[in-house]
Length: 249
Image 1 (cartoon, rainbow, N blue to C red):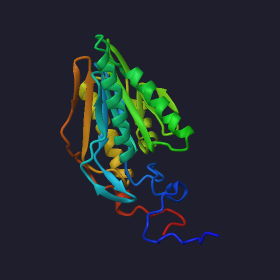
Image 2 (cartoon, rainbow, N blue to C red):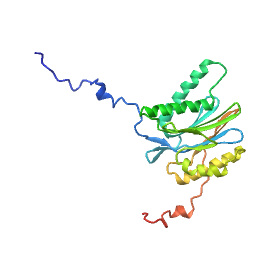
Image 3 (cartoon, one colour):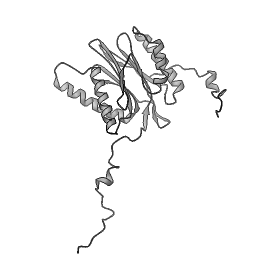
């Protein structure tokens, strides 16, 4: 009878069952995340705003993260959530735009097509229990038609005149509902976005006072250099926030 020998402990174990966890490439938890993205339609196109903070848990670790990117000729994409998953999505979109350009038929993907593609990607990954941990805002202009939509990490999506992700969905949307109108000028649109971003800066611990505003029209897109908002921290509620709060520390 052949003698059974123990495997040398120094030899690598190639069992797929034992190595499956080590080889996993999926995002199990969001680690470095970005907060709200806000976008709206204005008279000539789309405006989008996002700050440049990247939080490692509850620590504001990075303050120079760009979360608004151009997609093809007609679209802008803004993302909240896990930044590595956002980078993965950008790789998907680079392949999509490259494949579209290879046809060389004089046509190019518009914002509606890109938004539909993103909804399918997010829903597909959710069904595989391997979601991309992002909320996305997609806006653009093609053939004079303005388009603005969002999609969540599980594929929930809609189109609207103004959208927001994260805390912006709770704090900025009421402001947008009150003050947005269809003939909003570029200057008024920027002021409205800055007002929303200032409220988020006051109330969202993950927000930083360093933001970018991007616009896209029929002529193309522009993404501003990072800049800071003027703020005022002398409000009495900021000086002693627990006054009158029963049961607070």
